[in-house]
Image 1: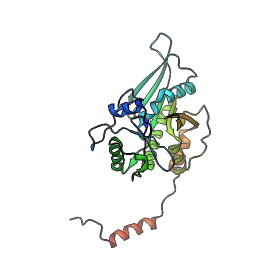
Image 2: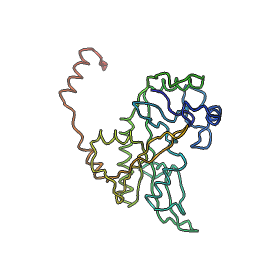
Image 3: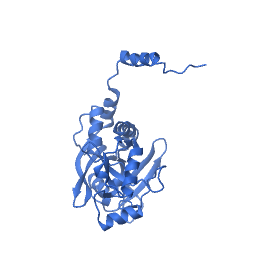
Image 4: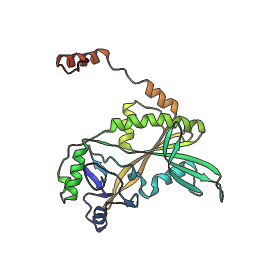
Length: 271
């Protein structure tokens, strides 16, 4: 377990461009300085993706901004064109929250909205992040981090739980509006979501309003590039069905946990 990309370049990339990016804390996806912060270092937390369990999870949502690929693919699916399309970020909607991005197709030479779609990024997150910070510090100090194993994990289950709720909240609004919402995520995260919620009926259907665009990181020369790996889709009814039909844990098992805590005197006395 170690970093895969730092300041947008693979850690093994020793090119002049990569060295300059590290020196300047540059993010080529933002086309500016990395804005991801950590309280324990005085420079940006520039880890874009990591090596974990033979996968390369993206842990910074900015990583999906590469060459506007995800927006181009969303435009193609939603509108069939990129003509007269504008991109807006962090668009707020009362009682729903903020949409990461809204692609708006307007009428030619007009501010009238012809159509729009929503694009949401879902990167993963880590546990034991202090060890990942140590890996970054080591890298910045010239250590070959690929030769070490850093004891951090992936917080994929929490990522999925939070994003699933957002899919229900935002998705039902978009579905009622008759518009499309595109969830951009890696196959690693998508497969975990499908398995944990026992989702089915996800075959791609262009009429479904909840769309999944699933990406992988693919090695290309001395960098990684996003590649659209698959498209899936579903309905809010299907997501709700899976959400409300999760297996109920055994009561006896939970009582057993409580009794062991009593035996070990782990409770607090309320006075």
